[in-house]
Image (cartoon, rainbow, N blue to C red; front, top):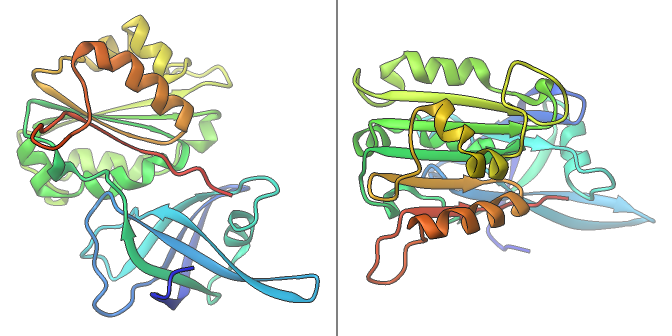
Length: 260
């Protein structure tokens, strides 16, 4: 348990569907972060006559200039923390651990022509913050955002994504190009329907985006299911994509948050 924690209050909850919510909480005075980072949210949980503290990490979906902090949360069945977070209503209090974590920081990668942002489920969250930073668009004039979910009802934040694409005031200039590719794997829709690793290996993802996985002109950010991240790393390594190391800039960064 972090000693650096403070109580925050739930301001607003958006229910995308049962068990999938976004919450906005009060932002402590002086608290700031870098888009791509995550913090831990905690609760005092009463069970069997005892109260115990438990916390889990969640990427921040809001931007540093917002007067609130926003998080995208899915309920994990039989989970300890996520079901309770999803059940909170406006006015409820929870703990925010103010220590900042995460390696999904665009500044760790050199500028190039294209940036691939590959996400599954609530792994979309950090990209909602990252893509609203002007510095990111200055480094990568073309960004491909892929969001893979099981069901179409899980495709959250589509209006915000469209707003980012259309409104240059949210980050970047008029020459930028945001390519949004939703993927739905468990039901028939008009969207791509296979898992991200399969779409990469078949070439369908690059064809749909009109952007190649070319390590000489592209970088990759990954966030979501650990299995997806592992498979994508293995697929892209022979193409020249690797994580930054001491003395080597790299062109691929991954973050996985597997919650309960």
